[in-house]
Image (cartoon, rainbow, N blue to C red):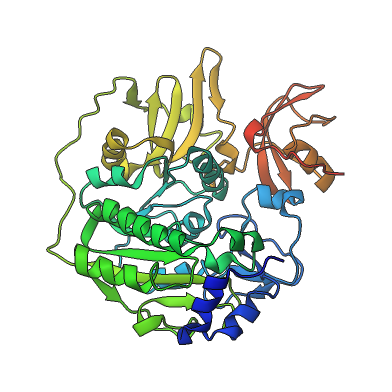
Length: 445
């Protein structure tokens, strides 16, 4: 294992808040493994599950399984996540936010916090999950789709692009890119990448990111700021900068579950005190007079987008009740009816790579369901299902075909009664419709 950088070690030893050797020793122990269950899908039971005290449906595991070889992981039944970042769930329940909030997860990849927020929202409101790096945005999209909720939009934008959307969000979550000191146990090679210069670079970048999105937060809205590091430059000092320079006030979260930060600003997951990696979280409320979205009607200039009224053909596949169905060329997609206008406002300013529920397309042969539709919790469970054993399920997830009996047409593939995806059964063979970019690449035998 790589040793700690000398300057990092010196800083920790001279910081009474971090308790010096106690923290360094904790960073040389084994990392905990935890998962968070999807409340909208089938419950799973993994070996040695014990509750995480600050998050609903979250559990420690006694050992780390090979998640890739569990079909229910691919079905979105649970998400492996670091337990410190799960403290976001506890914080969300402490905030006074609207029943149908508009939420932005600004630095969202790979999707742990976004899926947590989705569980909290319970399909109410709207969640915009953003990632600036294109490859990571695709991973974020995959995890959002597999979670199955239908009030999500995924964007691939720089934080500064959100400055164009004034006074829109009731809540913004900024899990800011940081120097990663809190990952020194989980990923020891990160120790070799640490430097004082990088700490200061990260602190400056974090300020820019928050400043870039600040105008898109409504007055009296909340910004939740978090990092996975220990130093005050990226944590308490940045929170104070936000309050002084941007006009916010610190909201204290009253709890004994995680230690208070320096000067009682925010809360820490310290592996020397609680069973987490290193994590910091703080809440700031934006001060100012109440502002609302411009009520002016937004004209849909793109003539290829129209409301889709003929939903009868969709009923065999999906419950369209909570959605407004749109047609873009031949493609159909759905977003929640009450956010139709906001969706088009966002579309004018952002690069949207996923929205609502991707339903399918209208072709000469009729309606063709989208390969991603089975992951939605709106999928019609009366569709024909074919149950697979674990080995068959892994073969399916790898993109392989094999002998299956069944009726011709689109069928849902399930394992332990949980939907994994579509096939198109042709009688003596089938087309595997599991998305190619999601397929298992490791050996499954």
